Length: 280
Image (cartoon, rainbow, N blue to C red; front, side):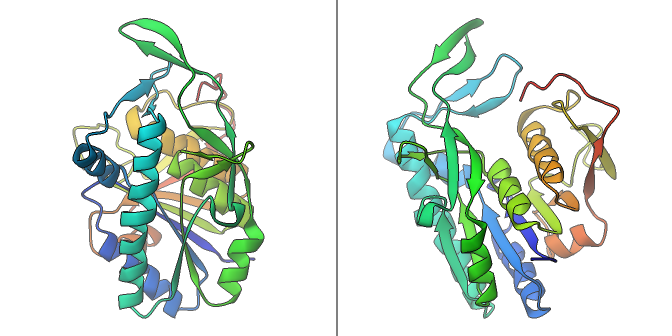
């Protein structure tokens, strides 16, 4: 299905979901097919605090940080995404006259993932193996489920968790999950709306937005860190999966998707000449 736009509403507390949904509604009125994806880091953190669930991070040997999802945290993630963030977005879409349908990766087996049996992490300067983390990487998407909803004039609102090969839920990075969705749909555009105006040349200066960032086609970007590094990995996966255009843009402003489409974003492209050894 040509012309599909996939928009990822970032989970940063400063991202304005109301503004994102208003832009989705405008694209919908223009006759565009839109899939709205989301994470929910801020809601996960606040709900974990309310429930007294310990919040921990796993840092891989190459410095990539990810949420440590034990049994209790997996429950928090599911409650936060399916019970707080998703109803908020579907309700906001409805306020604009847009029929949204909320789906986690568990619904209809929408997102299938390979569970990571062992995680290599660095704790107190020592490399350790972690075996009780319930996370994985999406390796299959039921595109027919999404195209059926789009054909019916609906807007799918998609998030983790995903369904592992053993039939149990696993947490998965929302950016990479939405990149897989965009690739499976043959989407024209993937817009990742974040708590920053794009990829920054200087993380302390929001005016230093890079108009075009060329991510190595077979390697992990080494000149960024933290959450942006994973977003660039996700962007690369979308491009390698056939998505025409990937934009990373500011989700904290009015008309965030429209601004991104008009050029107020970092456009991610593949750098075929830079092939650092992949570590992400």
